Amino acid sequence: MKANRSASQCIFCAAARDSDDPRNLVVYRAVRSFVMLNRYPYTSGHVMIAPYEHVARLAAAAEETTQEMMYLLRRAEQYLEEAYRPDGLNMGMNLGEAAGAGIEQHIHMHVLPRWKGDANFMTTIGDTRVVPEVLEDTYAKLRAKFAQL
Image (cartoon, rainbow, N blue to C red; front, side, top):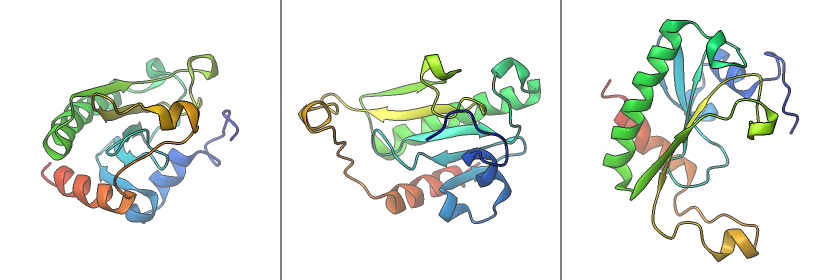
């Protein structure tokens, strides 16, 4: 996967343009940003919050966009805790290839539930992740939660 993508190749821009939310795993659309499932989750419930703007840095996004993204981050925290009862949550952004951004030209925040012991030998030895829920079930669960907004 090439990290440096133009807006025409960007998965976030493609999801923003396309109205087939279930196919694109978009669970909620706000005015300036949206929430979608990670197609290759680290854990069940792994969501991403992305702006409609194709920008590579948080500072380049409009103030209203970053405020809305933070609002959605707070709602994601609440809804993931309600739906999954995790022991904790990882939240964050990777800006730039050196920081681990898989798609460095379009900012996005990751929010994922974590449980004690969820990183086990399968990840380390087998180079395999075990996710106990299919994406369709995750989608239905979180789409219903975000419908509360």
